[in-house]
Length: 133
Image (cartoon, rainbow, N blue to C red; front, side, top):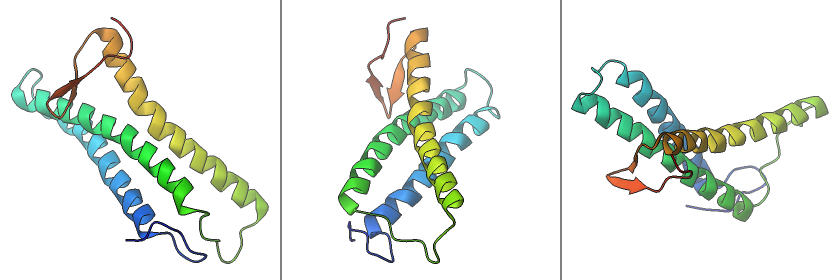
């Protein structure tokens, strides 16, 4: 699997990470939606909620990895045919907004749990709180 982007194609690792991020984000969302089907306080409810928290923390790590690989992989392939400038500007702004969303949302969830004094599960481990209760 290649890391470097070419003039016409993204590197294989960049592509794989893109789709992995999509899968994890869909699972994070699905966990919260499916949680509503279980009775509050049941094992199923608590397990789905814990999975949501764990996958949310994975998003932070995957975004950091994705940004590091983005730097290592080099420039993105050129769009053919070239877009008008206004479309390039809007595409870049949307790209930044998506990254901001993928970073801010899990951190805000972590801060919310930390401030409420609740444990922050990460696949059976407990993550330290960011702020005191």
